Amino acid sequence: MHFFVRTPLLRPVLLRSSFSKRTMSTHNHLSDDCIFCKIIKGNIPSMKLVETDKTFSFMDIDPLSEGHMLVIPKYHAEFFHQVPDEYLADALPVAKKIAAAAKLDQYNVLQNNGKLANQAVPHVHFHVIPKPNEETGLGVRWKPIKPSQDALKAKYEEVKGNL
Ligand code: AMP
Ligand code: ZN
Image 1 (cartoon, rainbow, N blue to C red):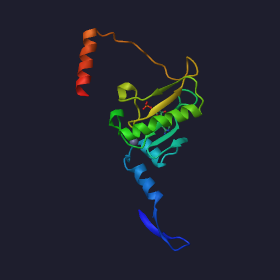
Image 2: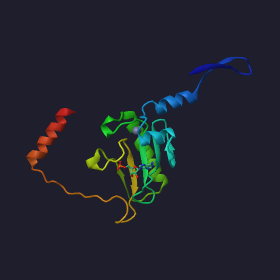
Image 3: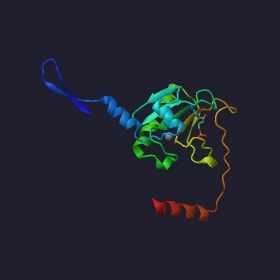
Image 4: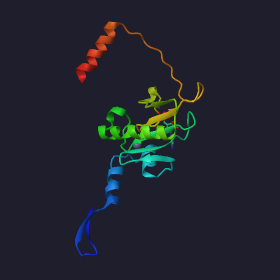
């Protein structure tokens, strides 16, 4: 929205309404029935950390360790590959900023996609999870599947062919 005002010198000056602009860029791509979209809109309270035009970050309500934080794009998408590049480009510097502010020493940045991959909230989110000791924080089960060189190469060719 634009409108004119008169300065003390009676020169008309074009002003841009920062309120309407912010509301549009902030809420355009959100869903009505998503808990994280509601947090972005302020309809559900959260412990907000950093907010930009494209990103929102806040404390996880059920932390795996003290200082567990979340970073979400202001774009409703269930999967990582569905989020536009400009939202992803904005999100990681926010994760870096809050990790630095929390003075984390060792930690995981985690982003789950799909129920099998432990995703409970179907709005893309990056976890920043402090790893202060063996017991608390993220536990990772890392069991390599040891494919043959042929199988490895076949998958490589398949993915590369789709790029
Ligand atoms: P995921 O399993 O990757 O989908 O993680 C979802 C995360 O969102 C969990 O760590 C929850 O504790 C967190 N969470 C769910 N609801 C809220 C909420 N209202 N405020 C803050 N964190 C939440
Ligand atoms: Zn959402």
